[in-house]
Image (cartoon, rainbow over all chains, first blue to last red; front, side):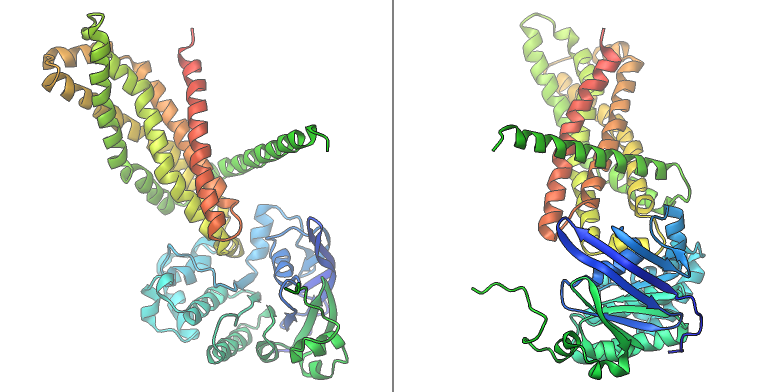
Length: 262
Length: 257
């Protein structure tokens, strides 16, 4: 993954706040992601990782703060402007979110045909090439999503995310629900695809093996704030009690799970 | 506690829901008339609503026409007015029964299916995926369904009119002893353009309502299977109620003296 060189961050987030009723999910998040950089946001379940991604994608409207993509605000955009910004993005969803009513190759080609207005025949060829990139045979392209295993769905989701050659790729819990070997296969594919695209990547996960493998930098989100942010190589000597507890998976520490005793 | 508080809260919830539905409708309708158009999806929805609803609408109107002939004959024979039977059958079918029954049957069949499909897409993040692929969910999912509902139900009702009148004809000829030629002539003579036209207008409104409520409830479903189930129920119930209310309003507009 290339070192950042552009002084304007690809994504710039300042004081991002989002609450649902009285539940404050994001409480002043600050984060910069440089062009070509791969950042992973770690944090426990319910810490606001997915909400952070959805705010950047425009799926949720923040209550306060700044989100900039290539130096331009990405908040409060009209439908046309939002579609233009989203053309820069590719996204691998936690559940893959494949369209049930479309065949696998149509899922992969969707962004090219609907978003990019590409001819179906040409889009089909690209879709099969992307499926090959993620290690799937051509026959898989003619299957329906319901016929795929969890690992295959993730691969198809990855192929769909990179099919439009996006500048920025988001990965939402890319290894959740997969066995360790398949997780490693997906991690390798993510690292390979991001490297080949030269894309900026933002991933969220609580799988430390995945975070170490696919990131240049890791940020930890706790109670709606970034409590640590640094190079992946330094996470084991972060000196941050929250990070230490999280990466070692200890029950004891400053992070208290909100679990009621029976 | 102030006893007016729950009433006020319920009223505010009603206003909020009305506002959300109005906004959803305005956005969806605006996407129906602005390019790009998804003709492939529109055709699929037209086949789903129009062609695949034919058996259920046909059966409903056939038996309704048959029952109508039997019941009307029983009633009219008390006043020696059996001759009015063809007129009553064709008037009832075209103005009221075919559009309302077809609307309710399609609400059960198509409204529920739309809510379930879109609701499942919502809870499995497929609608979010559409947005990240630079595709507007209103344009891609909602607009084709609204246009298909608006255009297909009138066609279904026209077919239902014919089948319903045929049902009345079969009973009148083979069970009640009417003369076939006189029955058909009487039906045709008394039928006016406005009878059929009002039914078609009703059908277009009902088709729009069914598609709108199916899409709206599915689009706003939350949670998992339970949320999708609730959205499906709400889609059918709300569409059915709105069909009955709008039926009265349209009838008033067309035929009130």
